[in-house]
Length: 127
Image 1: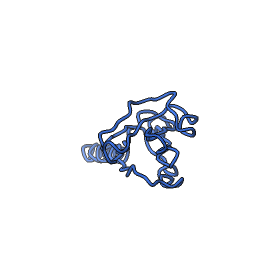
Image 2: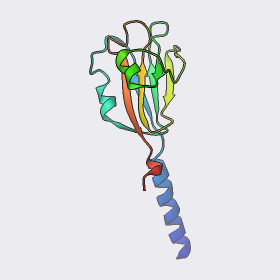
Image 3: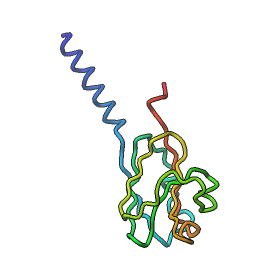
Image 4: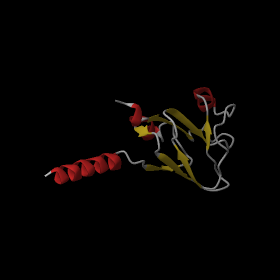
């Protein structure tokens, strides 16, 4: 009987780990991008450890994580948190809780709507 109880606990633990497993989300990074193109992502709470996979045309676009809402709003890179990735298939891991800001730094692209803001939450520290 004790053995069956231990197995049940293990199965429940594995199920919890699976539910918390990091997910990958596809972001089709392109123009034209209306102001609300990426709004579905902004409504959704992401978890620390999740990955955003930006797919876009090489040599036409890039993706860079900027470090402030001001940079995001003004389409500037005074505080970049990543290089300007331009491989056409860029994975960006949400490594910490808080708001993450992404822009295309090609002139006029961000202003034309190629920018994304997401919120990441850390479920490990909730208790």
